Length: 408
Ligand SMILES: [Ca+2]
Image (cartoon, rainbow, N blue to C red; front, side, top):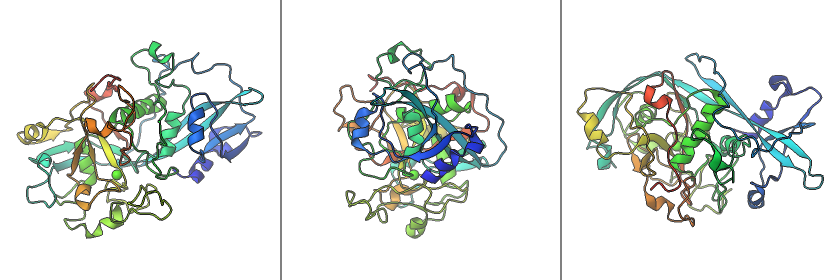
């Protein structure tokens, strides 16, 4: 999402902000105790929509934690077409001099593309160039209608969650008192979380599968819609644009890949001299695929929902047609699958069937013990996007993120 998009979202006529309120786009250092150290690490040049005069608030998040008493809003039934999902949160600002407490509203939106369901052959034939054994045996799947986020989740999207002070940070002293259904927010990172990639409009990266799952859970509570990560089958169906068995939706030859994807051959950007081998790019700046979805190939790998099981393809290949197949995620931290390749990868990793399985070594740079359940330190190639099923299957309706700090 661009700054201008945020600016538009601050339009008082659209959002009921009182007419006397001056709405501005500001660059602010973040002031709360949770973010003080973060504000030293980066200038937060984004998108805070600050309405003045700001409403003074009397309760701190610690006094009013969000829990299951805060029922999600009832979402309107969706038509079978693309839509924009608006999201709003707030953060508390304390004036360093006057100690006055004010509330800053953070607003954003992302686009969801309607994808008519259908059948797909998941996996690749043994003859496909660059194929790895875990892409087979191929199996047939049928997925229902769903919406897929048009682009990868950006830092702008992520920040509305990360700074939402209606929810406690996971390391807050009161977080342990919350019920099992409560959502907590990721802890701060030890390093600049962008790892010198861009921030505004660029894909969020380096977070764990668990962090992506909790983001979806937060979205569920905010919107009343059952947002989640795409299953591997949904992701591959979308990447194949619902048809074909070629390596890419446009064929087997990667010569046209540069029109659709940021990958190792084109991701270098002189504006990011700290990244001589390449970097992420603003989402949605390459052509969309035939479904209207951008960046499924490249930019960042994307988390899928399923718990990884090395036998899954073999089991599914014995079934004539797998209906909405999924391995529901468990409390096991490892493993899950990322799809689509990244800014750092060769074309073969961007193929529709390509899979990369998460492993413990992805956290080898994490200085904490036990290691964070939120951040994959230095894995600056992994992000995600969300989907929404038209008719959610029962075992995913009540799904919760289950990983805890000691999970390995
Ligand atoms: Ca991608």
